[in-house]
Image: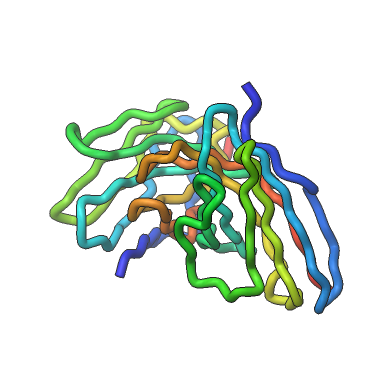
Length: 113
Length: 111
């Protein structure tokens, strides 16, 4: 039973560039959430996708956008990268009902130089 | 506003000793509470969850947590720590579709 998979594992980008991160949810899950984890901090909610729509969004600027595909996989896009966007980006999948436990992937480490 | 506080940034215990990690939450409605563990370079793994009912919940790897509404706390415990328990531990509260995490407690286990 495959868990949540994310790609790539590491990424180095230059300030001002754009990046796309990818996530495949755990088998049987239909909901994908994205979290940003800065060094030494807990994960911060970016947004959640369900039925190919953004269901809820955290306190992140519009430079952060996403997409969910019919097979429930998801992408996170970040435009106009800033140095402060350097972090571990975690994808979590869950069942569609509220308060459903999150199952996390191993994350993508993004470094912006 | 909802939030989670983990007062202890770092804890060191001896292998075989008992462990308690503290978590306090702020949330106006019925809380749905979780503990996750993160090993270096890894994602977060669910240890246990509290939704309702019995205030003492059991999780994986021998962990348990007790929900105390009067203290707004959800402390994690383990009777005997193993070296493999060394990791970062996060407490979280769910508000429906969004989880709020604490800043984590780093656990070091000494032989």
